[in-house]
Length: 334
Image 1 (tube, helix red, strand yellow):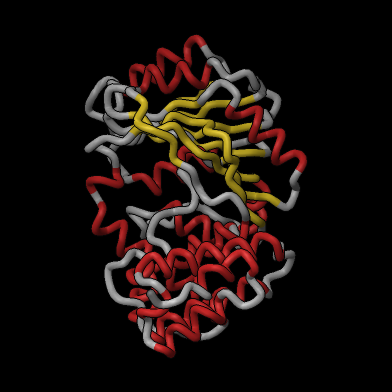
Image 2 (cartoon, helix red, strand yellow):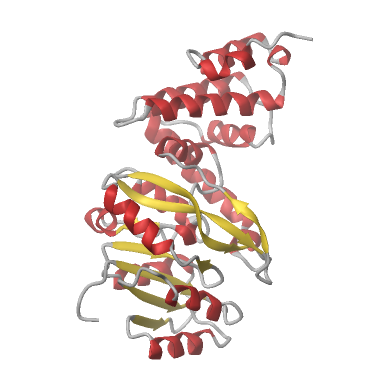
C-alpha cells in the first residue's frame, strides 16, 4: 500500500461476526477500485477479528487494527481516521452493505462539487435477516440539512452512507468527540459544516440494517440528549447569541409534536429561517422550498384558522412571498 488511495473506507467492528462477511463482500464488489479498507475491531468477544484478518489476507489494501479492550465508538472511529490516507473518507458499519456503485457515485459527485465536504445518500433499509423494508430518504440540499441539524434530534445523514472530504477534517483538526458516546456523528457534522457544505444523493447507495442491537435502539435516551445539545449549538451559532436550552428543547419537541407550538417557539423558528436565508451562498430556491415545507408541517398540527391570532400571523410570515404556500395559508374556516 505504498501509493495513497483516493478513498479510505473505515469500518468499526464490535461483535459483528454474523453480518461482517456480507459487509466485507460488498466492499470487495465495488466497481470503483482505488480504495483502502481500515477495519478497527473494538475488543470483540466473537469471531469478528478473525474474519477481518482473513479478509485482509486476500485483499492487500486492507489494514486491520484490534483494540486491546473496548474503547467505544468515537475512539474507535478516531483510530480509523488517524490511519486514513485517502482524499475522501467513506464510512460503513459492520452490519450494513454498500451497493456496487456507492464509491463511484460519491467520488464523481465530490470531484465535481468542491464546495461539498460532507456527502451522504439515501438507503434501502433491511431487517436483521437482510430482508428489504423500504427506502429511507434524507434531506438533499445544504439548506435542508442545516435546518434539519438545527431543529431535529436525528442526523441529516445516515452515518454509514457518508463520504467526507479528508482535507476538511485535517485542515481544521476535526475528529469524533469522545464525550459523545452517542450522536458523535451529529456533533462532527456540526463542526464540519462550519467549513463546507453538505448534500445527500437521492439514489440509495447502501443497505441500512435496522435491528435491536443497533446503537440507535440501545442508547436512544442518551442519543436524544446529546442530539439536543448539538441542536443548541446550531441555534446559537446561527443567531450569534446565547439561547436558553429550554427554548431549543421546546423547538425540537414541538416539531416532533411532543409539545404545542407556542408564540416564543414560533418566533425562534422564524428567526432561524431568516438567519439561514442570510448564510453565504444560500440557494434562494432551496430556501423557498424549505419555508413551504416548514409551513406545511406546522399546518398538519392544526388548520390555520384554529391557531391563536399571534401564531397565525407568524405562520403567514413564514409563508411571505411563498407562492407555493398561498393556497394553504388562505384556506377559509369551514
